[in-house]
Image 1 (cartoon, helix red, strand yellow):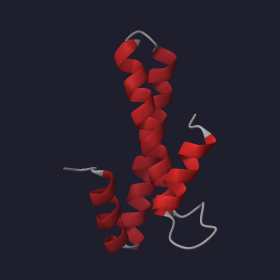
Image 2: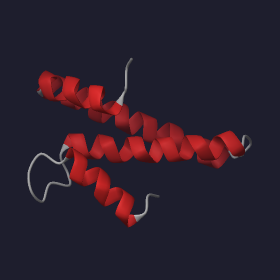
Image 3: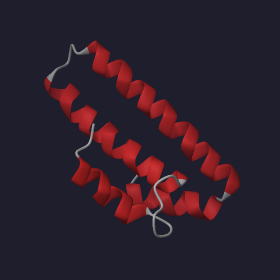
Image 4: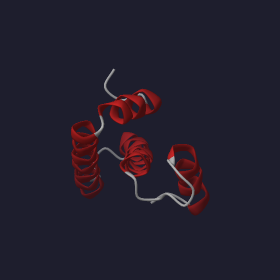
Length: 88
């Protein structure tokens, strides 16, 4: 899990309007931060299979959110993946 301050910083960076915590951009950004954190953990603990399963579930959830965003607004999708550095 992300600490409260880290999560709020991600929300502030990707929010589309004041009080926005549930837009696809914010959700994908939070998932990406969690994925990065778990990836670093797994570099140290290679045999932590429970965390690996959780990581794969988060990656799938992020993929579904990105697919939704791509279907509904290609402009927002392109902007988000460039900001997050996804899909090089």
